[in-house]
Length: 168
Image (cartoon, rainbow, N blue to C red; front, side):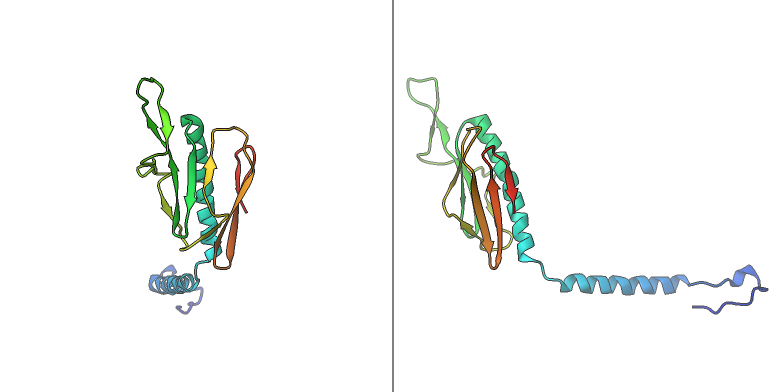
């Protein structure tokens, strides 16, 4: 910092910080901020909660898809990720009305941006209860819950009878 001159001097010799001094302080602050942010490890519970919130949004989309299309959608999870699947429409000889079949190839939404198979962000996740969750076109359904666990972190996904979802 420059020394201040007595008040009787001209305005050209005013007190203050030079641009170089300000830039050096900004660089030091930037380096300190970067060091602190790199030193903080990501919280697995936070990532698990993000996975659960995304899953809730995808459940809502799948539920709407079932109500529009009429075909049941099953949600299946394993340690690596999860997927949605549904039967395909099959034509019946002698009938104008197609039927849904789960024989052969299932529609796994491979080209769907929202319902395509996903991997868990945090790595292996245990889902309790294990097994498929069926989404039907019924306006009122059973309450259920899923618990997602990764290490010591656990998040619960709840579904109420009206089809609303919540993450706890």
